[in-house]
Structure formats: structure tokens, C-alpha cells
Image 1 (cartoon, rainbow, N blue to C red):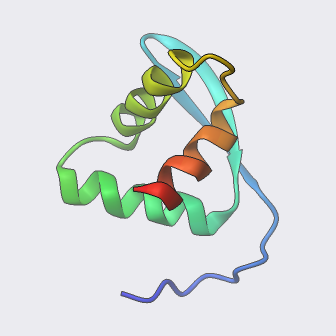
Image 2: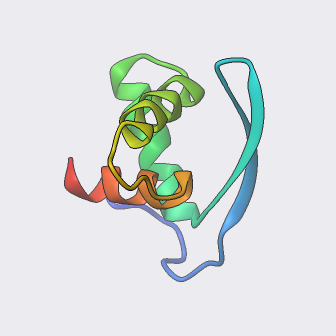
Length: 77
């Protein structure tokens, strides 16, 4: 399904909770929509999907920021 979002919209900040820790992530709406679709297709909350990505990210030799990790995860899956 084609996403009906302006592709060059600036990032939007959302508050999320990962392992009981509250944080916020700024991503462009197109990435939020991709995350929502994947979370829905996997039957998990978006916070759980982001926690999964965060877990992979922190085990890298040189971890990037969470927003960058989410973008990379989305385009390399």
C-alpha cells in the first residue's frame, strides 16, 4: 500500500517507553507510518517494536542514536 504522507515532512517527536524508561524519538512521518504498519502486521505494540530495534542497536560496536537505528532498520529489513 502506498503511503499517503508528504515525503519531506519534518520529523515528528513521539514519547515512547522502552523497558520502563520514558524517552522521545523524532522521526519523519513516513518512518512512523512504516513502523505502525510493521507493528500491526506482527501484532505487537509500536513500543515493543522500537524496544526490539533498540536492543539490536545497543549491542553494536558503535551504536548510532535510536532514531538513526530505526531508519536503518526500516530500510534494511
